[in-house]
Image (tube, rainbow, N blue to C red):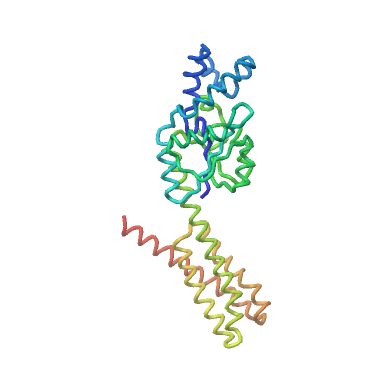
Amino acid sequence: MKIGFDIDDTISSTCEYFNKHILNKKFNIDVSSLIKDGIYYMQLTKYLKKEDIKAVFELFEKSFDKIPAKENAVKVINSLKEKGHKIYIITARNNKHLKDAYRSTAKQLKKYGIKYDKLICDKEKAKACEEYGIDLFFDDSHFNIEEVSNTKTTCYLFTSYYNKDLYLPYDRVSSWDEVNEVVSKMSKKFKINLWDSNILFIQLLLFYLLPMFFLKFNHMGTILLNMLLAFFLSIIFGYKSNLKNKAFYPMIVSLLFIPSVFIFYNKFVLIHSAWYLFITAIGVGIGSITKSLFEENTN
């Protein structure tokens, strides 16, 4: 899968560091009221002078590699990378307030020891998710989650002090252990759907390739061979697929067969679509039972 992660307050404890070491120590700002009101660093334009904001972000950028990562963040990301997932770090950091957002961020990630495939510095995270085909995305900003949720990307809001009390219609995670659980569950579903698609694609090829090579030798033999292969594929499908997809598989196979009738066979062969429905239903059942027995024995 392609997984996208925000940095500030998702991978790193940015607000905690920013409030304590920059706002409080450098600018003598009482951050308790900001925390109470759920205000974070990107909203400071309402509370600081323009010249102070520039100085704040200069200090902020110089402090990137000093900001601590959240507990287990590096461990989980590197583990996901080792398992074969593509890791995209997608941050809204840009050169509007920062001198060199990409370079300073890359330096921070290097110090963390995070392994990733691509770093993207872009405020338009929804656009980035679409462009790179991100399957799963985590961010602490509900504004970003709102935009990305309008794409095909599955989103999770990372809980922070400024969004924890907000009632929002998004799935949440509150720790990197939860992130790992979400990815594990979605990865399993992703693999199942990949199996389903591949098996259906193979079945489709059999319906339209076998007749091209064997139909001229044996009309009925070609149909029987296709049925036999469809039966074995349905057993695999029953073993690998989830319950919802199993219910539709026999019907889909029988429908895939029908166009081939008009291309390669006489119309009377349409009756065999019912046979495909029957034998694939049996195959799916055998596959499902085999899986249940195997899981019982392993447990």
